[in-house]
Image 1 (tube, rainbow, N blue to C red):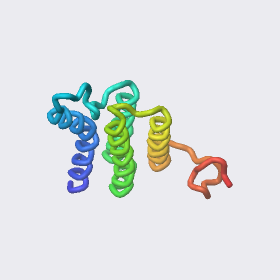
Image 2: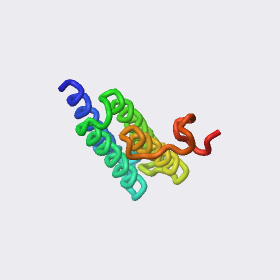
Image 3: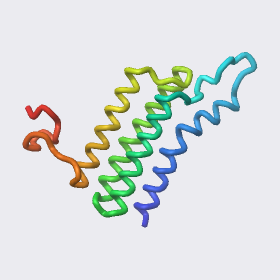
Length: 139
């Protein structure tokens, strides 16, 4: 039960954190500000939030189905949270936008978490003999 509460709390933080920063920033807007610099909008931000939520749902579903241990779920959630926090920080520093290069890097990192989840649940595949953790090419 305690692990479920941790997971639920982390899930709530992941879902709410990007939106909370944008909401809070809107209440501190100066009179001369033309735009809110932390307004997290745009197709890249929205797509990234949806991807983070999708990976998070996969982690929660795998944990509830006992396909991964609580420790594995927590590790994957922490990696997902770091990606979400990085996206929020980038968007906050660039007037609510995520530049293409950083967006693709964040998606790559999120895809790595998703692939790790699939491997940990047995629904993914390792490339090579697995000696390198599934990275390709197998050195």
